[in-house]
Image (cartoon, rainbow, N blue to C red; front, side, top):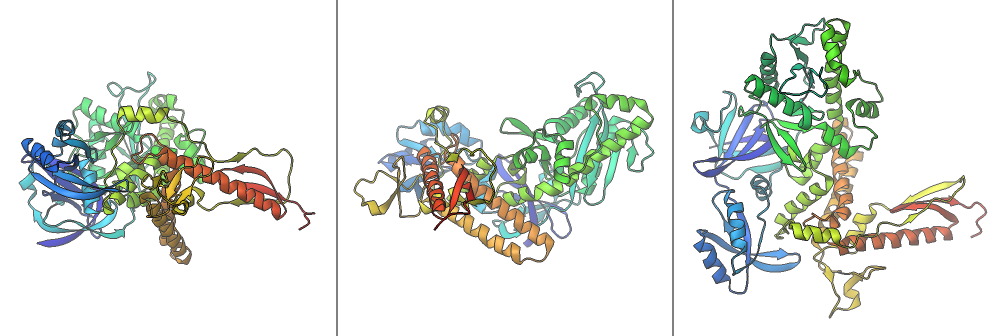
Length: 600
């Protein structure tokens, strides 16, 4: 029995001897050695709510072959209910039995059947990707699991004997490796069945700067290979040797990785890119496929840029200019084949362009990915997933994590019919907007509310579990929304307001630490963490009215904006008492001009 520490990078599960095996992919924080930790004990489960005769429900479940059953009390939107926790033997059983169980006459509803197995593991074990995790168990001979774990000699296979423990210590993702490819495109839009990859550029913060190609160059960063096949193999060798903390590309989910994978298939080249020697896999994330390289966190910066920045164009050149106020090397995309065929100065320019693509991608990654790592620590889901989530999805998974801690049963995703019904519901009236007055104004002041919507959620206890019709209650026991008259209990504190309060308190603590910190790297880390908390808090209002949100409640969204409109109107009126004249307002703040001859 021994203990080790790993930086948790990735997680999945495989089937071994017809049982699920959770795999935690990590690195030794001191020696940067790859470790794959195996947990053979975790099983999937769902919650079943019966009618009055719980014994009948238990008997029906046993007839289906489900013997691991436990009665548990949990909070369901503020109401305590007795659920049956039904533990199954394999995640694949969940979709097979879900509808059968739901259709039983003794079953009222089923819950938490739609949480992916690996995410369930992270939530239940309370471990967070990108954190340092302590694992206890034994080192295995990789041959023991050779059919599922074809690994290098220096990769450690570790079998857990106890639950992993999150030490709540984060680490920097220091060695970032960016990659980019150039392809031949004489016939227009490149086709991976036909058009070869002509250059593969790689840049890492460790100092690596290299362009792989089948043509020679004067530049010392160019490595010439005798075939495209060997160029692909060399690409894999470099990634294995560098063993980066993070792999980044720009639009790599949609172009680079699919193209590399297809060219490897066409040329019959095995891409051993994963630390378990697996090929590139593509996972459905939203409407797109995400390129997964097992054990190496792959981040597509294009998705982060679309989330964090508002630009008229999202080309690599435009993003680089916006972030660094510099112009990168550029070649028209439809002319790349001409530069390749030139074999002279144009070819050298193409090598420079390819190198610059990877260079600028690395710089952008260094700028943007720390915030994504901070969000990963907050939400508690893999960095690979967080990099492809909307802020609304992050809010939901954060709430799911907190619901588990507070013994709250998690609402199901809406069915298609429920979603359609929500879409047809009345829309929420937004924040108050006063159109700007015409003219040129002097002595302008801007007054805004600090975290207006999050503060309203907390102050007015706005949550699906606090809504009341007020019947049998004194008016002093609930808040009444202006305009629409929705009522919310003052006590107890609602599920979401309590979490929101913790978020804002934690953000203030971190901002204080940031002001006191003198080490630039730590100050920067605190800044990213408080930014992540701010994004979570500010996204909560929008999530209430999002039709696919598990905690969807239109009344909550409407109440928040109603109070918001009242507060800003009251503030504008109050400002007039002190000699200000509001000239423009929008949601949580307003501009006002000071009237110099104001007579108090």
